[in-house]
Image (cartoon, rainbow, N blue to C red):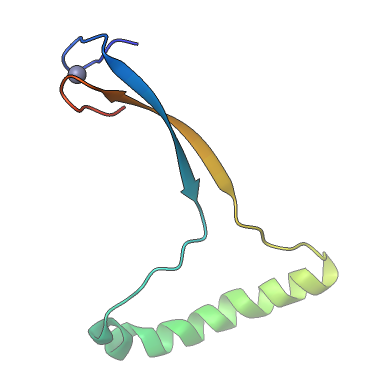
Length: 80
Ligand SMILES: [Zn+2]
């Protein structure tokens, strides 16, 4: 594979493991301003239907592992 940036043939392919459903961490100000009602709204609109869906459909959420091939140029450090 040729690097699209510098045209060098000196490239590697790296397998990158990506995880979905990653929990985001928020700051204290976020929790004070948005967190308390956002969690409530989220709970109301997401958890209850999700629980109902889980009861009626019986599907479980799983963490998806997606493997991506990433090209790394050894010449200029470009990744694509
Ligand atoms: Zn390059």
